[in-house]
Image 1 (cartoon, helix red, strand yellow):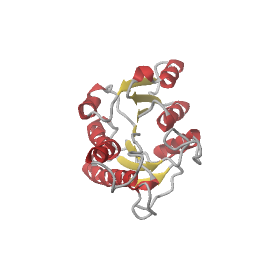
Image 2 (image 1 turned 45 degrees about the horizontal axis):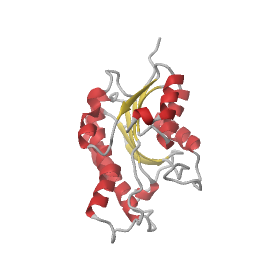
Image 3 (image 1 turned 30 degrees about the vertical axis):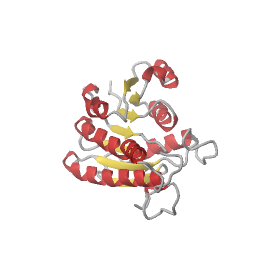
Length: 232
């Protein structure tokens, strides 16, 4: 029997991450899913129970550097085909660089930009050389050229993530991996709000389609959930 392909989905207890787990399962993949507090991730736990042997749930706190740095040591020996690092917070409610404290901007930047790259570096040797894809949930709001203003702190954090992913791609060239910065759309989640234009299901379906399309592409790209290129 051919072994199923394996995806890692970070931040899978709800919203887009949970939707991506469901989509991978629907396409006959196995999934390693992470949550800050796995026992409280009731929907993810129920999904694992309905898919015996297909979903592994691991604890991961992206705001804890030691946990991030040691996460890969707890992964199974199987190679990952795709890893999606789905982590992000909206930041201070005022979204204003003139009002932000050092502590607030430090927390925002660590969660949205630093921790994802820090985690990605530990995953490189666990991704299948030649066809592996490592993707980061970014945002069109991280585009410098498409920035009309507003939400400047969140925009800055996602622009920083995009810049770091570019440098990361340069680091992993010898592994022949594909690195993606993905915009999931404006999605109806706790962060996106009920008035957002895109459902979790449509976003997840599109993101997984893009991830599969890019296997073996050996490039770094900034794409939306429908596969369109976004200006940096």
